[in-house]
Image (cartoon, rainbow, N blue to C red; front, side):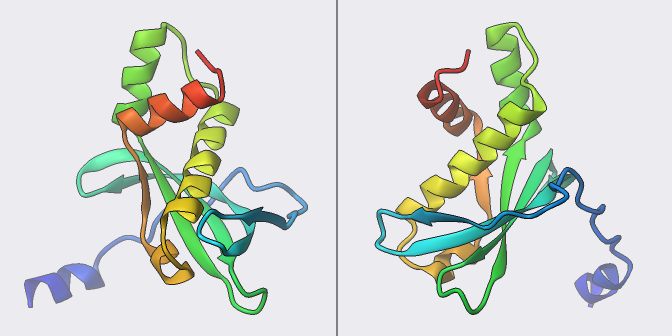
Amino acid sequence: MFRWLASRFRRPPPPLTGAPAVRRQKSRSAASGYVYQYYYQGQRPLTRAGEQGAEYVFDVSADRKTSFPVSVFVSREAVSLWERRHGRELRSNERYAVAKMALFQAFDERPDPAAMRELVRVRPADLDAILESLDLD
């Protein structure tokens, strides 16, 4: 009962920001064999299970008929650790690149579109690997 009561008083997440004025549909052929179409919806600060970070939201379709939101959560801890090790701030476009590459990894690694409905999390090791693959330091 307590969870039900708490859910009634939970604040809605902040609105998404940073979306382009004109949305461009993009496609990605995944190693799983599916071809996904996606739009970038925007990002917002978010706390998940006590962990602070940014949520990047993409509208994804695997059949061109139905779409669903996919959230990529980039933890503040991962970003802070990277920034301390590299002695510079990670710019907003670089953070977006991390989220987009994490989305692509999920497209490749998850077996089907139903699995894409689960949150994509970017942890410190993930962030390091993605930025290294992009040759950013």
